[in-house]
Length: 280
Image (tube, rainbow, N blue to C red; front, side):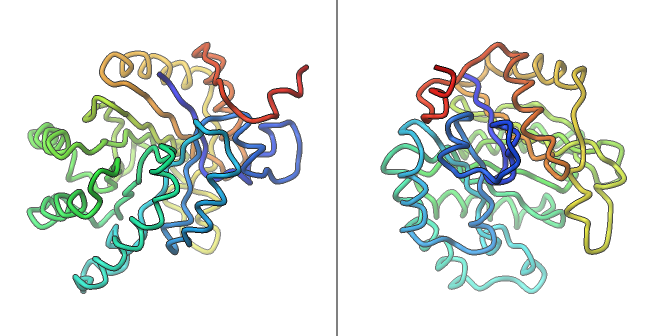
């Protein structure tokens, strides 16, 4: 099975050929999964997540980012207290209940900061992470190249397999000193996730107030999408589902690329929202 989604739902009016921000219900009429970064900044109320769940079809699914306390952002050097960590995980587990009860949680995405390097300390943290989210599907995106060094990366992949954690396959600018190469390796027989950030090398290293607006400013070409098609076809033989998330949205390109890849793969998504009826 192949699924395709985008980061957030409001920023993709071109999915429906318009200019207004989309509602979650409108988005869910076109694509079967969405990645939500809201929990990274603050863990939503259970009632908020329950509202999301009620606005989408029964088979629609969410990928939720782990909270910044859980990914050790801004607290790594000085450390975060065990009490703060356990509180964050406890609140996060409670927040997930509306989705887990209805089988609408595809994964919790731990996108670790660039300074989360390969170390004994961090291997231990990955183990803790799984212990504190029992029964929850977890995906890990590494942003430090030490995890992919020759001679050790296979051991890292085996470690993730043993933990039952999904290795997120990242596409980003490759020709960077601290860049992550494209590593299409599956560590779960249930799910593989590709997160496609674009290949804007200049924007990726941009500084200043508008760095977010430059970082993912990129539109994948037809040739690049064809390369992804080949990779996805190969990954299908190794896992039950390949989920592709387009995050190249600084210029509004994610939606167009997602629909183009959908056409290229020759797939359709059933059980979506009422927007499908507009054709009849």
